[in-house]
Length: 232
Figure 1 (tube, rainbow, N blue to C red):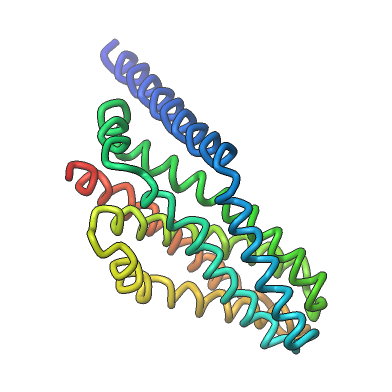
Figure 2 (cartoon, rainbow, N blue to C red):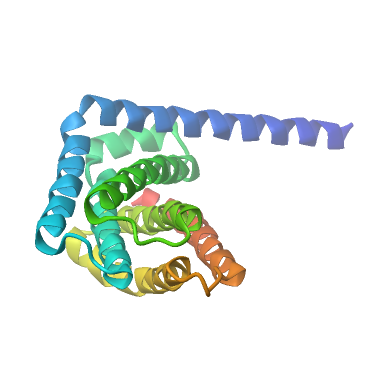
C-alpha cells in the first residue's frame, strides 16, 4: 500500500514538474514572439554575414566552408542564446523564485534555447548552401551534425549565461568560462565535419556519442549547480 502511494506521489511530481517546464517554456516563447526585434536582429546578422562572405570569397573550398560555418554558428549562439538569462530582471527572477523550482526553470531555458538554436541552424545552413555553394559529399550526415552541433552549443552557452547572470562582469565571465568548455566541442564538430566532406572517411560513432555525452554532462551540471545560483 505504501509502495503504491509512493509511486502515485512520484508520478504526480513528474507531471507537476513537466507542467511547470512547459509553462515556463511558453512564457519564453511568448516573449520572443512579442519582442520580434530580437529574433529579426539575429536573422539580419546571419543574412548580412553570409552575404558578406559571398561577396568576399564566393565559393570557398570544403575546409574553409566548414570552418566559416562553425564560426558563424558560434556567434549566432552567443547572440541568440546568451541573452536568455541576462534579459531577466532581478524583480522577475524573484517572482520566478516564488512560483517555480530552479530545476524546472533552468530546464525550460535549456529547452527553449535549444529549439531556437536549431531553428537558426537550419536557416544558416540554407543560406550557406544558397550563397556559398554546397561542397558536401554527404549532405544528410552533415545536416544531422549541424543540428547536433547547434544543440550542443546552445546547451553550453545557456549554462554559461545562467552563471554570468549572477556576476557583474557578464561578458568577461562568459568569455573566461566558455573558452575551455567550447573548445572540445568545436574540435569534435570540426573532426566530424571533415568526414562528411570526404567520401573515403566515415563519421565515427564514438565521436558522436562523445558529443552527446558532453551535452548530457552540461545538462547535469546545470541542474546540479543552478539551484545554488538561484538562492543568490
